[in-house]
Figure 1 (tube, one colour):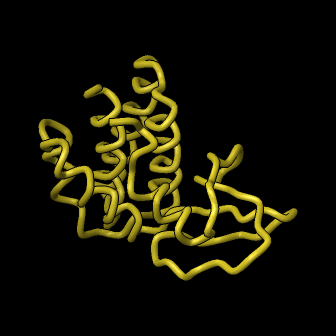
Figure 2 (figure 1 turned 135 degrees about the vertical axis):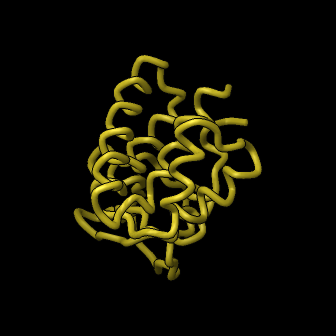
Length: 149
């Protein structure tokens, strides 16, 4: 399985009716925009400089986890994060997820995943003191899928 074979890329391409590319900024995907954008609960869309930039929503994280669950089994940290999946995902978790999907699609080196894992664990510790953490299981899944290859 290629890192680019994930439901988020397919949904983004369906929405925009064209191929998408990884965004070089804070969004997940972007594409030249000239036509209609179909609605989706998975992304927010920003139109800027003739491009559509898509950022994932919490629903995208849930859809990604549902897809990933058929490919990996939670263990260790993943099992602990499953307990938080019904909570809300704050912007920091959505940003980490965006980074994780990008790294997964680019088949990032294991060293980059060490930095990602550290940030994931920091956010998990914060989630234990709040009502957040709903995006962390999807973040973990990005890493687990990438390192499984």
